[in-house]
Amino acid sequence: MEHISPKRTYILVWAVLMCLTALTAAVSFLNLGPFSAPVALFIATCKALLVVLFFMHAKYISEKTTWLVILAGFFWLLILLSLTMADYVSRLWT
Image 1 (spheres, rainbow, N blue to C red):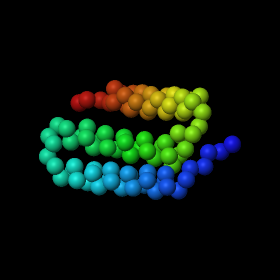
Image 2: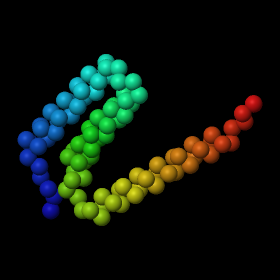
Image 3: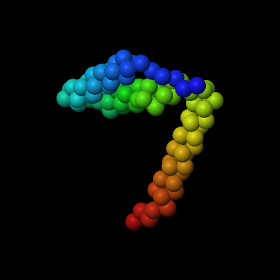
């Protein structure tokens, strides 16, 4: 049986996403020094988490499926990083 979320949930998540987007834009005008990137990444992670949990319905699927997707994502990241490092190591540095 599929979970059906009320419209209010989607509207609330959308409003939070808009607030976080405005916060990202506001923070970009502040000089936070070395904390600029971590703050921007934290806000982006929060937005991504909201999108995945509510709009992609990850909140309502089984725990086994969630772990499978997480492991597949890390495996794909490992492939991408290993290919990038293979290219980086094989370059001629003249």
